[in-house]
Every structure is written in C-alpha cells, then in structure tokens.
Amino acid sequence: MAYYQRIKDLREDADKTQTDIAKLLGTTAQYYGKYEKGDREIPFSRAVELAQYYHVSLDYIAGRTPFKKTLAEESLKEDEITLIQKYRNLSEKNKGKLELFLDQLLSK
Image 1 (cartoon, rainbow, N blue to C red):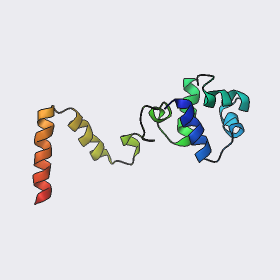
Image 2 (spheres, one colour; image 1 turned 120 degrees about the horizontal axis):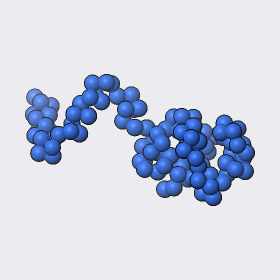
Image 3 (tube, rainbow, N blue to C red; image 1 turned 90 degrees about the horizontal axis):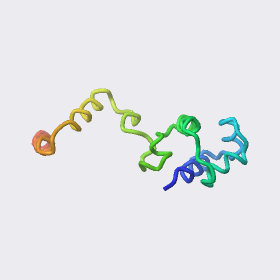
Image 4 (tube, one colour; image 1 turned 60 degrees about the horizontal axis):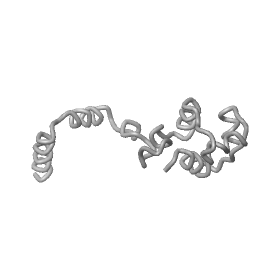
C-alpha cells in the first residue's frame, strides 16, 4: 500500500478535511491533495508531522508495517523492551531453547 493511501485513511478516520491537514502542514488543500493522490511525494518533514499528529509510526505511513505503532510505543514496560532486545540477539538455536524453557515454566 502506498503512503498516500495511508495518509488519506488516517485523515478520514480522524474526520478531518484536506483543508484541516493542509493548515496543520502549512500548505494549501490543493497541494496536500496531491500527496493523497500520489501526484507529489510527501517531504520527510511533513511525513514526520503527520506521524506525530496521528500518533502512528513513520513505518506505518510508509506502508512498511500494518501496525500503527512500534513495539516500544505500544506501552511496553522497560524490562519487556529489554527482554525483546535480548531475544533478538540470540541465535536461532538459542531462541528455540528459550522457547522450550518458557513452555516448561508456564506449564508448572
């Protein structure tokens, strides 16, 4: 999905007009409409503004993920984030061992 469809969907979900979002970005509704149609590439700084406004990640706007927020933004606690980072650094073999160990812990 192209980014322009995402920004259109986000705008519509927020019940905003192109004029509303254009004012937020400091441009005209006509110019903003070109972003939504894909006629103009949206500048990075404006994509950042939209991500902040809609409380979504840039990856979501870019269509790189179906998730609106990153794991870190999904209200994970600091220790949970640390565990995920450690898990990602494990070899595939050790990930399997860890999963078996967790299954054993959870079954007791």
